[in-house]
Structures are given as structure tokens and as C-alpha cells.
Amino acid sequence: MVVGILPGAVLIALAHVLDRPVYEALSATKPQLTRMEEGAFYRMVWLVGSLWTWVLIALGFYLHDRTPPPLGPRPALGQRRDPGARAVAVAGSAIVGGLIAEVLKVVIGRERPTRLVDGVFQEQIYTFKPLFGALRDGSNLGMPSSHAAAAFAGAMAIAMVAPTLRGLALAMAALCALSRIIASAHTLSDVVVGAMVGMLAAVFVTQWATRHAGTEVVPAWAFGAASGRGGRG
Image (cartoon, rainbow, N blue to C red):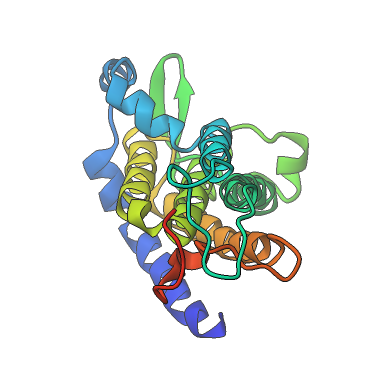
């Protein structure tokens, strides 16, 4: 964990350097955003950052994992399945990641890069509320992006417990984060910090869920069962 602190700090610093050029290149005008929000694709990627989406995905994992073979996963020799562990990992990661992001928003107090005034976006990159001001007024807070945190937390959990879905899950999380920049709701640094918060939360929650999956039992699919002895998730 300590080894990853320096690269993470460098990534956050780089994101701040790129905030304005990325924002100017990608952010949509109010009419463009209105048209975009009417599209099914935008709505889909927006939902990737919703906690309810990950709760429903977790329910799907639970229903799948409680199904006996051949439709359900096959436990490794000498092991038994815990049908709730993957569900706890996915839903728990998104919830914890999203909650941490919301707390950090209040602590940091940095507002979104724009404020909507009379139907027009007014730019205000790096505008902070007064000290402890976010405790009184928690509106329009942007750092970090809770959408990005929830999306990457859920995606990272899936990458750990269902590796075959890793690419799709992380790609959808990245599109969700990108959509927040296009919507002028966040800067690049907002979504980068949110993604890092979510992924860290997922590592801890998923490890906890698999470690407590059963009495002295490690699920056959834990972390992909890469040894070849595990079953298929």
C-alpha cells in the first residue's frame, strides 16, 4: 500500500495540471448537455455511478452463486460456496466508496467547476467554500466525484471476484467518469481522486468479504481462483 502512495500522488498532481485543458476540450454547453441527457447511452453510463445499480448487480451475483452446478459456480475440491460473499463485495464496495467520497467532499469543500445561473453554466474551477462552510451548505460540492468513486469501487470489486468481466466493468466505470467531465459536473482531478477512493475501498471490502465468506472457507472463485483449482464464477 505504501508503495502505491507516490504514484497515486503523482497521478493526482498530473490530473490537476490537466484540469483546465481537459475541461475546456470536453465540457458541453447547456444545450448540448440537454440533448445528451436525452440519449440512452448517457443515461446508461450515468447509472454506472449509482449505488442502486451496484446493489442490483450484487443481487444478480447472489442469485447466480446460490444456484447449484452446472448453472452455478463449481466450488474447488474441499471447499464450499458462500452465495453471499461476491454480492457483499460488489455492493459493499460501491456503498463504502461512495460514502467515503461524500465525506471527503464535505472535508475538502471544493465546489464543482461550474455553477448553473439562469440556465447558463458559469465557470468556477478551484472555488472552495469557507472553512467548515460545507457543513452548513453541502450543495454543489465536486471533489471527489462520488459517481466515479461508486463506479470504480463496483468495477474493481467485479475485477477481483469475476475476472472475466474485468474489462467490461472497468470500461463502463471509465465512461461514467468521462461523462461527469463532459457534463461540466467535475474536473479531471475530481474523477481521478474519486476513482482512486473507489478502487481502494473495493480492495479492502472485497478482501474482507472473501475472508469472512464462511468458517475457515475461502470461496472457490476468490480473486479469480487463478491457481486453476478453483471453479468458474
